[in-house]
Length: 492
Image 1: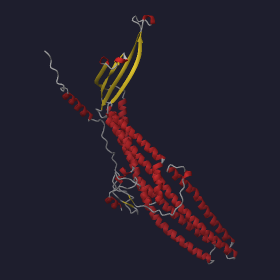
Image 2 (image 1 turned 120 degrees about the vertical axis):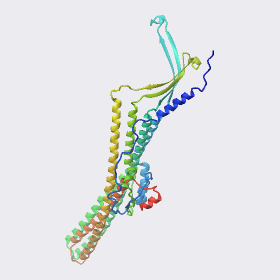
Image 3 (image 1 turned 45 degrees about the vertical axis):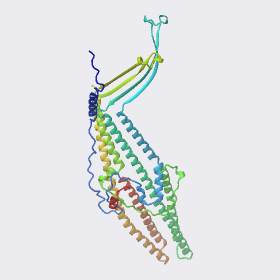
Image 4 (image 1 turned 30 degrees about the vertical axis):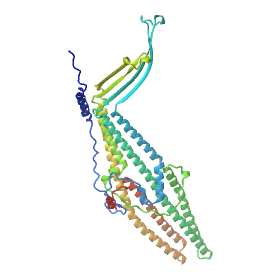
């Protein structure tokens, strides 16, 4: 009796069950799911609760474009310099290359989801001894050729989520690398902005000193005229000349400082210092108005904090990778091809061969290596979580530091302005007294020096406030372009 042939699709239900089982097992992923390490950052900045002109609360989105934050200083020259920095800075280029490398690692990790297909072709020539086992050529020899054309497919099913955890880790590392790129770009932009602002303040001090030298030269001429008519003594002339030359020396001393600022700007833009110069211009810089935001938003705004948080996520995923080593791996493989001793008969049915089947592999004993790897992964996560919390706390401290610095400097500038007005009034009065012959020129020189110091201190204080404003912008994570209209209105 002839047995009936099986229905051609009778194996489909079993195949469907097998695939469903594999899918069910593939849904498992060992290891803890990631949660951001908890950290209490407070509801508001302590130093931001007082009124700080130019720094007001806002509600920026986490995904808001940081944008061209340096444009808040409304300086076209600075805007152009930063654009050149963004295009040519070598530190930024290095960080960008590191990010592309991280993306390559992500693609490499994702390749574990797919089977590996390989092929090969070869030819071997071999021989053996005669039938009697003699190695002498007189007893005959068996020499033959072997040709082969093979292909193979191997696929390790991600039953326990090892590949998924690896991809999760590499994606988090790539996100951390992207945040590093943002931090590097922000740091370079801030360095250029601070250097530029200091250079402009230096230009203003240079202008002040040059104008003062010109005024002192007139005073020296007046003193010489008075000496020639016997109204003033020779000591007054010496004091006036000393005043002129010492102030001129201070003006010259600023030249090398300005040169170094120019060199720093050139290097930040990826340019040789010898090929860059920045001419003086009219000083018109003012403190910008920037929203401060809330402490909780700092965790997403600052790229260094975001990078630390992503590294904690990557370390958490590595725990699952290490734990997956405790479970068996399931590999599906298939091989096939042609083998024959005659090349002309290689692609014929008798030369064909194939094999197909699954394989389970499990490490029984490894001397504690897997347990050590899990412990190492857990410790690495604890370390990264602590690094994240420390980065966030450091960011909060920096914001508080620059808020109080700006607030105190604003109060200091008010007092300094009063001192400067008094110094100018004292100078006017003492000059009138000198012209009337009531005091000698030494008294005028003392008040002159006090007034000049007050002028320079006022400029230095303004420069310090401008630099502190850049520091606060950096501490807050950058600019605020891309905010919704209602949030922008709230910031103003």
